[in-house]
Amino acid sequence: MILNKLRSINDSLIMLNKDNDKELEKQKLIKKILNRDDCFLRMDVEVAFALLASLQIKKDLIEDVYLELID
Image 1 (cartoon, helix red, strand yellow):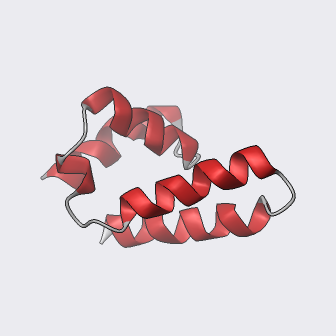
Image 2 (tube, rainbow, N blue to C red; image 1 turned 90 degrees about the vertical axis):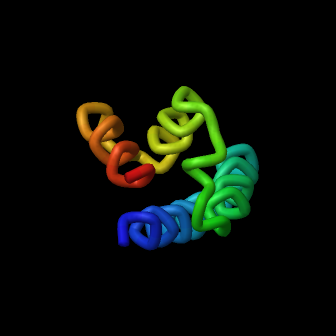
């Protein structure tokens, strides 16, 4: 499931950013959002794209990933 992959990426980014308070807080917030299985169905497209970009999803893949998440 792609959502689980995103959760794993988020966990990795949390570990990598232990010394960067701003990024760490952003990733912790994303973690709370990703805890809901229907999180992408509950947010605007623009917010979803920004969240995926924050998870370092390549720009040219964001739309495809998003469409898979809401399918």
